[in-house]
Length: 583
Ligand code: OOB
Image (cartoon, rainbow, N blue to C red):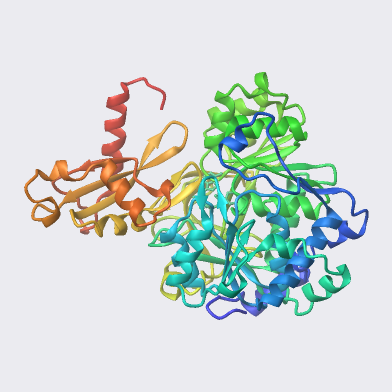
């Protein structure tokens, strides 16, 4: 096991193997079976909306629009061979920041076969996040599109390399080729006319052990910067296989990746990997915009996709079914943030599909409603744990289990839930119990049928339409601004996104930068946005409202009273929108 990772205790590992959860599979081999058996079936294709919106949004044209299982398998081998020849080897880390391009699966499978560990960054991440991820993981490579959506990831890689001594290679899809400076065009490796057997032998020359860490997902994080979540081949293979079953995937399934593919939900719940393991077809949608994604559903005859509630609401608002033929869609998975019952109830009839609620976390535990659950379960609850071996505790503030039906914090342990974050000993001591249960920070209730309902949250983060923002990370950034004396970031309600970030600031009266003007004029939302932009902070984390105050409310134990701040901003918004406005 990689240094800095917490292994499963041997008695648990033994039990998970004996009970068939861990089968000794390598994720890199998931599609070998389908490649060998009738490899001409389409594995992945680029979803093109009919309207020319893709070009306008800056997406690049991919030279390959479709890859069969045999082609995908061979491309992954060729790329693996090329990367090995560059010097990448089992156990190395690589910061991967790809959007939903058709090459995404080939890149993933190449890395998984080599045992090179992707750190799954998201496309909106910028210098602040990428340099941290590179440094913290001691990545030797950064992989991205040279330019995408008008942003130059190649230049971002160069900045990360300056800050991170271990980072040697910048690997760019359709970018420049400058071997001597460690910049490589991935297309050359993907298209290398090397013999298929030779490529395969190289890809499989030094395979990872199934109990090894396969990749790192990012946690929403409640403290500082995102934590790295090490997932093993064994645990994620179960995650993918069991998710594919619960979502009813098979060879005739067509799964559209609309959310960013690097996120756990579209990656493996069952997502891209589950579809390929089941012999289905993956459609990479370049944009999650409702009109674009719905056009892809129609054009590609998509049968299943995953959305966050904010997008599901937008689909409803866009009069989906009247404007597009969505009749192929059988299952719409919704998760990542709370789906209110009123919206859940409307989706099925409006879109003409079955809803599956998914309450999951990158740390592991997944809860699903079942496709044959009664409507009341699908509408009112977030489902039940995927694995019979998932252990669930729901505890009160005293740490003792609450009675069924009562709300409490969800703690969990199981065959695909991590035992610790990467290189985070101090945080692990808080985030996990002595017995190895992960403290989810979610307040849930369990009903008599075993289904969970998410009631709230004990952790200090903002869930902006499924994107998790650590309040502490934003506060630390704001505190570094010369005019800011105190800062508190809290969630404020938003009708579509669910939550947005509001920052309460106490300004420094004597700050040299603001001397001469009244403090409340010196810092406004535009100034804070420009400041966070200059620090290279991903845009989705920028506060969307500022409240300048003389002092922050304090609890009787001397902490900032965030509950009061949340109530304050909710009341202000309600007053501004007028009572009776849509919540
Ligand atoms: C998914 O994963 P993460 O790691 O981005 O976020 C996990 C957190 C949960 O602890 C919970 O606070 C919230 O997101 N959450 C939900 C939810 N699904 C996730 N809150 C209410 N209702 C839901 N259905 O978000 C994720 C990972 C895999 C599958 C689906 C979602």
